[in-house]
Length: 408
Image: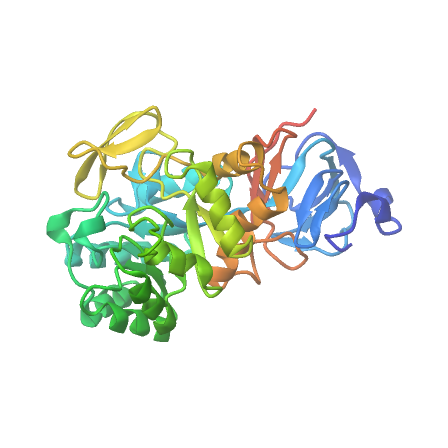
């Protein structure tokens, strides 16, 4: 059966072959009919949807002897895709061992992120290259979707929570070194294109199929336009770590919002952005050009305390991460289930717009939309179950429950 058909148009015989159950099958069973939820599809919200999972994939028709799970009163969404994430569960993607990185990945999976790009922070070039080698092995195993280098090619004027002593100009040869160290798994590099070598590095990245992201930048409007024309396609955490909009000097924000070639990242945690700034981004970029990210660091899923972000010490208090030295915001402790809930309950975004920003848009950006990012037959069975109040209850990745929902 097509995934976008409502409950009442189920194919003949589907109910007869399905076994109704309130006990979820064990991992590996992989023959499910998820029935009755408000289901978010590319075409909109289906009030009483029916989705079929067969093995690791979403299927068009129900297999014989499938288990029927009643999700009436719940939401069914595609798994989240996070393109900018530095860690979680007390583990860092920038410096952790393979097992520590997997701890962070599992932490975010439990909060709905079924596809994750691991982000590094500014460090010595050799350290970054070694970490890229480790992360590339996890990408080859399918544990992460690739690597994002945030720094060291950023502006000291907008360094945020990056070590100024380790910053450097975006020399194309050094940019190439990091990309090569990732062994084909470099997905994105954030840089300040106004620095010497910046535009040449943007062109290099575009030619090699790596996303050039404008961020931690002191660029003018005109310099940002030049970078976009050279191939930059992402705004790293729009508004943060860049000049504010001025009426005579509009800066990078205006250039990034107005160009239809650019996807803008937003950190929707209530700390990084005022709700009006979020609405401004959606109004000017439109719902197809926004990607919600976490920009999470080690403390995501771990509570308050002291942590390291690269070489810098961070204090987390009431869920807000700030550098011990200077007090700058140092990433976030956000998980994408919280970003969704805030988007629909506080920011009052239409559910389908919020879901696009969490799933379809970042999946398209990564070139993975043929596999993930929406609930359609043939795609990976990456899906989420939420209650009526948008509290996450279940997470499935590739047909196996990461978090099995408890259903009455």
